[in-house]
Amino acid sequence: MTSFDVVIAGAGHAGAQAAIALRQNGFAGSIAMIGAEPELPYERPPLSKDYLAGEKPFERLLIRPAAFWAERAVTMLAGRRVASVDPAARTVSAGGEAIGYGELVWAAGGSPRRLSCEGGDLAGVHAIRTRADVDALIGELPGIARVVVVGGGYIGLEAAAVLAKLGKQVTVVEALDRVLARVAGEPLSRFYEAEHRAHGVTVRLGVQVEALEGTDRVTGVRLAGGEVLPADAVIVGIGIIPEAAPLLEAGAQGGNGVLVDAQCRTSLPHVFAVGDCALHANRFAEGALIRLESVQNANDQATVAAKTILGIEAAYDAVPWFWSNQYDLKLQTVGLSIGHDAVVTRGDPAGRSFSLVYLRGGRVIALDCVNLVKDYAQGKRLVVDGVAAEPALLADAGVPLKEIGV
Image 1 (tube, rainbow, N blue to C red):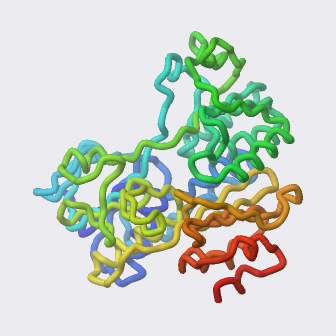
Image 2 (image 1 turned 120 degrees about the vertical axis):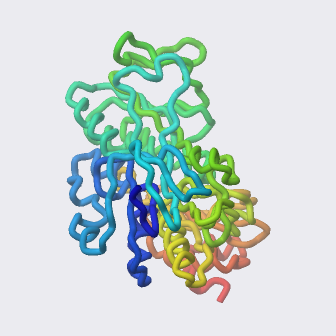
Image 3 (image 1 turned 180 degrees about the horizontal axis):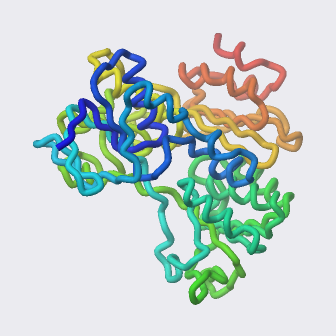
């Protein structure tokens, strides 16, 4: 049986950063990274943006070139998925082989949530999570005129923007009454809804998908009530299911992900979890248990786990941040707007450069900044420190955020 001092399950942002941080902090032991995909670790956010648009080749998505991993003696076990974990024996089963570990870093991410309705498995139904997902979609694009995007979150809207620019007839179907409903306040939702409509995208809100129609390949999306939207392809962007089953089956605490403490340790000895699948208490969510699906979270948690393995004191307490590119709009978010009781608009959305400042109990908890990098950079301090600020002052775009609460 092959054994390594550290085994990293997952070769995305979190897995890659765990290996990088171990070496950067002086770890001299053996490291193996097990990845379900055949590729080296690569950036996922561009998949629904530049890569789908054909503006960035895959080589530019690689987090590090092959030589980097070889020089740092990181063994890459690609094309394998960890099927089970034996915490007593300190082994994982991957690709039919038992692999021993001293410490296990679980960075397996998640898999796209699929439509459970009739027709959900037809050809022409796509997710956007891996290179293979997007390559399959790109390969079909020449024969596609009409696309239905199910889900009005970031992935769905980013894909819709790219496909609209490519000249496709795009319809976004969202079950809730606004796009981005789970992650942003209503003013931002309405702004992006209007932007997509202005670019020729049809946005259908408050509608449920009843079934996908077609014999072998999808031909339409049937909504509750019977209406059928013709479709040559369907993109499903309704979130992910955290890849946690092997750890939960091994006895780890969790449910919607794997529960970790501030050092990213699971309840299993010598087992850490980081990234999309790590369920953790977050002070920016008032201590609630949440998962964060972001590059920032993946990198920061992976670094904490690596330092903890090395005996270096570390705790995860980073402010969450996210971004989204749609058309010529760059959205940058810092903090979590969950539970806000007030929202202040800085600037004029009609000018396509503005910020929304979210407050709870009079204190700043998050900002959404559209084409306004300065507010994003200066607003981070307000969120980290929970600064109490007068709405009228926040609303005055002539007052730099760096001057508020000082």
